[in-house]
Image 1 (cartoon, rainbow, N blue to C red):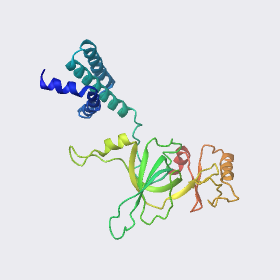
Image 2 (cartoon, rainbow, N blue to C red; image 1 turned 90 degrees about the horizontal axis):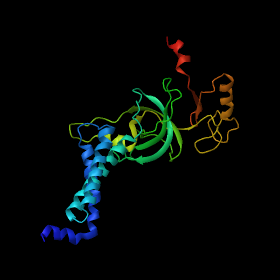
Image 3 (tube, rainbow, N blue to C red; image 1 turned 90 degrees about the vertical axis):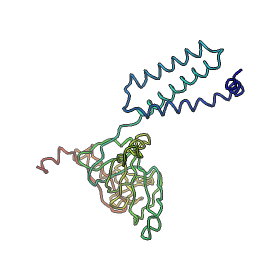
Image 4 (cartoon, rainbow, N blue to C red; image 1 turned 120 degrees about the vertical axis):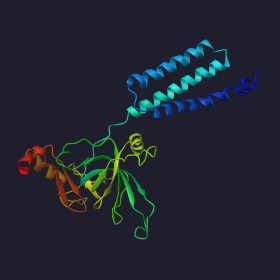
Length: 274
């Protein structure tokens, strides 16, 4: 008996530990393709490999090498189709505003960045927002983004943030950048699979927000003053909007500034812009 065959037989059931290696090779094959395969190649090719592997296993079940070849084909095919399916299940990449915009959303996580110098001894904070919306006439009535936004706050921002809080801030956004050089780190691919829409830098202070349902980000009632437990409810402002026939508008109150933002449809503002 050859030495290699004897060594493989000695492994016995431990040979199944090579299945993740075969799947990793299938994932690597997907990412090494020069262009994105369509549904025919993305599904048809691994299905053909899967059928071939199963056929080899059935035909040569009593042969060690047939089992290895069939199992390798099945593992590589499963890895390829898993990578293709994950890539195509991601939400689409949105078009971010190219100018400074007021962004509102829900805090998903807060991270403290390492300090960069004497002026930034404490380190800046990076906030990940989920369900972001843009307060612009063109984006009126937009659905919340399915992807997250990563914003770097100003070093002097005193806002106390916690996951789940509703906030808004004026920021300058940018999409994931291209690789700096051929074969370099691909931030666009990382953002695609991480569910990120891009990043940005806050131009002002982060403000807690309460919308027209009369609840603050901490759950208390909010009035025109923007303070919890205020006697004047934000619902009164919503009723005034409904009386004006603006049922589809949203009034948001920044609790520390005491002002509201009224989003107007573009068709109503167009005569003023001309």
